[in-house]
Length: 285
Image (tube, rainbow, N blue to C red; front, side, top):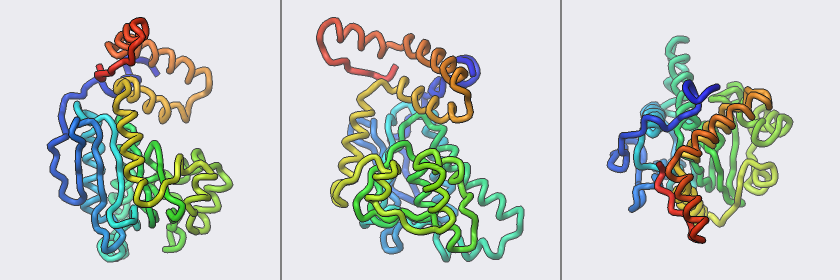
């Protein structure tokens, strides 16, 4: 990996997204246009995903790679639950009538959502309350940081509907978060992982009261958004791309990455603020 081919994930940012109007979920942006919140909003059915919401989420996270204004993304669910997974009537039923090419197109599309979440430079924080199941558990898993509640119920329940636990990257990503044995248990059994268990295992970074978890996510998001945006994007890029590197290659990649960050104005702002004994104010360039 070199600076010229893969280490600069934020080089072409120029498209603002604060004014985006979502169709299949809520999209709200903070007054300073730095933190965006995606809210899955079908609370009467615990916020299931549909073909359309999958596709719109994929397209939005792809667009975030070129966003000039959004610094951090929070994803949450309405009505006390995060997401119950794919809608039984609007997704599961139609899937039983599809041909193999149609099925593959669907599974590749859902996988592309995870790729887009991992590929955008903005850190993604999941605020998880209540039910977090199936594809909902994948959305939480694919986020960079997860905040939960003691009563969060997270289940990778694919085996319970006759499918493999190998879905949307779960067999690759989940073991890296909670370990191979624990991931194997959840993916083979489909049982729910409690909030306390998820926190103990490292799936959840923090636990909060149900009525406070979204506020806590916004607090963390604001803290990250106030940091050096370009450098944060580099950190995310390296965190994801170094999985398949040897340690020496990763050290070399990070040398290129850090040298690139040393060319930013934010780095110079931090130095001059330190000399003046002030707190740096980062501007993302």
